[in-house]
Length: 500
Ligand SMILES: Nc1ncnc2c1ncn2[C@@H]1O[C@H](COP(=O)(O)OP(=O)(O)OP(=O)(O)O)[C@@H](O)[C@H]1O
Image (cartoon, rainbow, N blue to C red; front, side):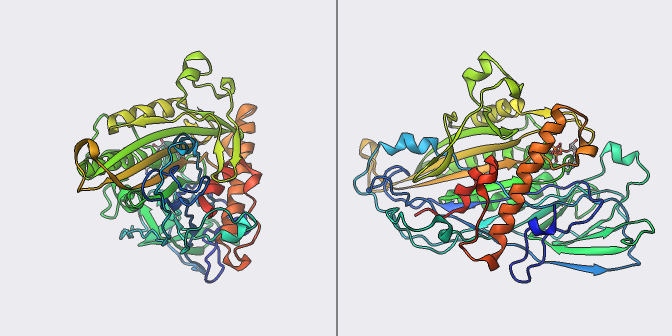
């Protein structure tokens, strides 16, 4: 990805992620938060019909980067550098179900935007560590300070209401078995707190010894578990996932996603390795998604006396620009199964109020972590994966797991059947595992794999363009953002545009 398509620091306009030739893997996370700010009822319970007063959007904030030359750098090894792009989705099918239940006293409140802040782990790996890189990053979107108004202002351009802010974190993975066997693979990545340094070129060519340093909101060193600075799945979740759970319980929408080259560890970070242990011991390799879900239900249980909570999930993938429901039971039973080419594709439509959504996407109410985990397992088993030259189980699709929560605070003065709801907060969390970007010659063989690779790269390229446009504060809020160039970014739009 060219630096033009790379997120840039809003202060100095330098790219967040370098365009380093020879880099061959990476992954990345993103967040979106958006406040649902209705009172007295769920999101559909608006006094003015069709008032999308519940949607507050977010903005990207980027870190800073610097490039320096250190000809005598001692760092060794091959890098996997992430290019950055963004994804999110919002499928408000359940909103329509609720829309009929009107509440006469519904009053949208003013919005106050809040930004997500992440703890930065103190990671200072030794440069002599033999491991090599997977990088991964996280992006979060900051909510702009705006007041809520009705959507009657149809003449106002949606683009005028966009404010973006991006946060990125990087994770460096250990060498995989294939890399360990290749003597030419060495570590060229160093992590010092939240700064990542890449030393490009270890041979005697012109780029040898050139180092690039980049600041991220977080940088995780997961190369060697014996290293005191090793970032485990739990550490990553605590830094990236917990702040999102906090926001979700405050009524914000949130989106987190992993981006990176094929084989860089996106699925490992997002989903991890399935475990029967639902309490996740510290060494558990369960990823962010199961930990996130577990934490959501832990908090719901502690709120039981004061709050009624409804949770529902949906899960779909975008494969070759087509959307497939991963939790549609009827479809799973009747045909297709794990073969995405046999499944019927869902369409995306744009609602005038709620924005883009997936038509007929199934949603499933869940009342415990165990129930949610079952759906997650079903969905994961349906994902399109295949062996490529770079990953034995490569995700060939972008997967989007959505959790929608309705949190209704009970009026303490009311009791039993006459229980009254003080107000309802609604939040939607999208946890996204993107398909890996790849060089066709490295990653794929022929036929379907090449076709998939082309589609993946195309949508990731668009994602990069969208992020660059959103992150580029110089273009101003009315700059053109090419959301419509791919299904992924079209769905993402609802998480970045401020609807009034
Ligand atoms: N932090 C890590 N610690 C240990 N193993 C890891 C780590 N990250 C990735 N791996 C391993 O590396 C391999 C590739 O990871 P993974 O499948 O998550 O990559 P990916 O980025 O999702 O690839 P693709 O885009 O092709 O789906 C897996 O075997 C995984 O277990």
